[in-house]
Image 1 (tube, rainbow, N blue to C red):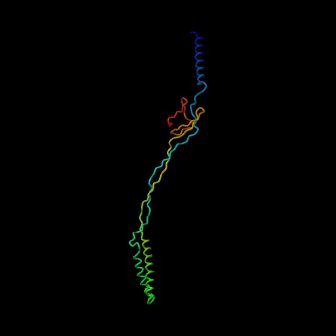
Image 2: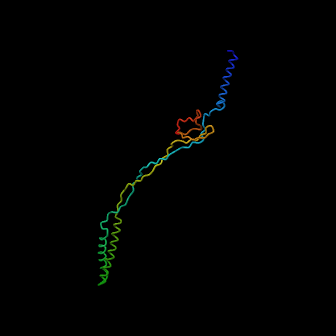
Length: 179
């Protein structure tokens, strides 16, 4: 083979390759190597955990009443009132004063016993508990909005990306993508 023929074959092969590359578009357009990150929004969930919260409180109780109708106070008061009333007046007035003293003394004795019973209390310490909810937030991932070759898309990633995402063969390279 002569040199000119060899040169012609070489030029022919080079031309064929150039035309093939031009026809496929790969000669003039290079594929992007990175996608631009436009936004990254954390995806979170709130976790509620119940727990018991207890505290001690002072509780006042009334002691049990033996004489619920306050009969003893009424009888003792009436007797004392009758004795005091008997000291006043004369004749039939003495009877009226005794009766009036007995009624007044009975009423007073009833009231005194009621006041004594109401104040007859004791206190105890009791534990009161209620359920409260503690809240905590957990990050599930990040919804990332990106632009690749003029097109926008959204993908969820485990970790927050930087300003760009690598691209290979026209696809995002995501070792930590979730969907």
